[in-house]
Length: 173
Image (cartoon, rainbow, N blue to C red; front, side, top):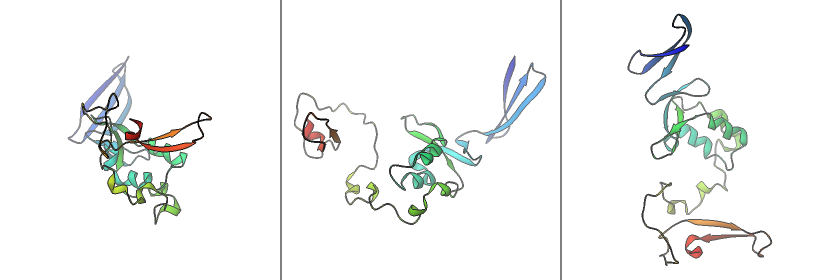
């Protein structure tokens, strides 16, 4: 019966040793504890929220949508979620680790059609995600302009002549 034994080696490292029948040595492997992690290419990094990992953000912000092979490569950097269920990635210490994923045409400038170059980008909130609020719009209550800054893209098939229409949530309510 395999037995797993974890021994604290020093403050930053843990050695994991596995024994078979408690007499035969099978595996000794170093792993970094704490926030530390190993990147897919065996580099060292910190497991932090994706919004704080500049090397990964540089790749994500280069174009939309990302080519599938780049998206798949970035998924390998996932290392968990925060208490608020936000994605954490193994952010490499070496900032040049992910440069090979930056497309040649975007190394010097962002796409002119990128949402990140839009003149109204500053109007959007810097933090996004779940809002813990008891404020809800129900029963057709009126709202003020920009009170709830969500938008919806509606698409119809043969029901109406409208094919696509961007509406503010206030119009939906």
